[in-house]
Amino acid sequence: MQTAIPFLFMRGGTSRGPYLNRADLPADLDTLAQVLIAMVGSGHPLNIDGIGGGAAVTTKVAMLSRSDDAWADIDYFFAQVSVEEALVDFKPTCGNILSGVGPAAIEMGLIAPQGDETMVKIRAVNTGARVTANVQTPGGQVRYDGDAQIDGVPSTAAPIALQFKDTVGGVTGAFLPTGNLIDTIDGIDVTCMDVAMPIVIARADSFGLTGYESASELDENADFYARMEPLRQKAGALMGMGDVSASVTPKFGLLAPARSGGTIATRYFMPWKCHPTMAVTGAQCLASCVLTPGTVADGLAAIPNTAPATITLEHASGTINVLVDFDNIEGGFKLNSAGLIRTARKLAAGEVFVPNEVWSGFEGHST
Image 1 (cartoon, rainbow, N blue to C red):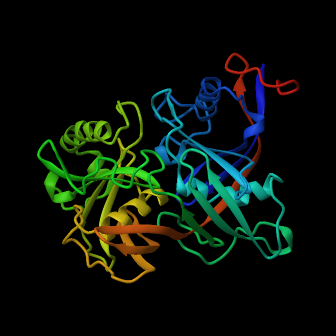
Image 2: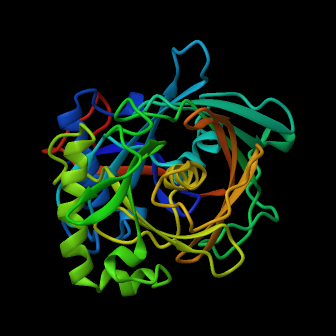
């Protein structure tokens, strides 16, 4: 016997995974984690006994519900399921998967289309961020085809405009969780910042890297990870996040001067593998680091003085643009909002099954 759970399978930005109605899942987080582990096939490098794709960008889960928040339409609860370990992290959020939340909410009937374009107001439950997603809905149907191209996805699709607010200090409660623009850990200068995602940010040359290495080259560099991971764990403690050895947060980022016409070159780590492109949340934090005087980004990029400003981050597969609205205040930088264009596509719909011994479901779910 197995338990059947309705799902949509979607690409959101440069990530992919199941989109589920929170009401179809166990309320208890420990049981929920076991359900998601079984669903994804966590614990095997190929996720062979589940629907994961054997990479951190393909073992992500979105859980949606109508929001009871006065502002929001939809609550978006995110889970990062590990590829090779039977672990689930409910602490972070994911902006790429969020790209599919608006379309998925409409497809699930959680919100009605509002004309040729539907604005969906989303509360990111994990961090408290508020996000608006403008979804094309001609004739009351989600449109997926279009001309928008994002690096890391081979095809074009309909654009989804995302605007992020209330992203500062979502995990740690502070823009600079350590209180410092720069901390020196294990002899390396880092900026610890919490905007949409807490990240420990360093210059690539601090590790003897150019910052232009491919994701696979970085993942093969065992010496780099042997230095980076202890540093990340120490930074996590300084950021007030406790023992982060088993958590995917804080993430890690590297910066270098741009070489392809962008604002700055970046590499983003999830944290135990290099992201093949760039996380939407990570992009906001790295762009904020670039715009903040006195961080490790100083001297690597020309900083615009007027807002809003477009910060183009070069990543391992191309570029991503972040439109940042900010104020220059005494002593630094104040983020108001960040906007990005992403795309999404519905790949499959139906039921996904987990063994009854993991969860027997609600009445009528087993088959």
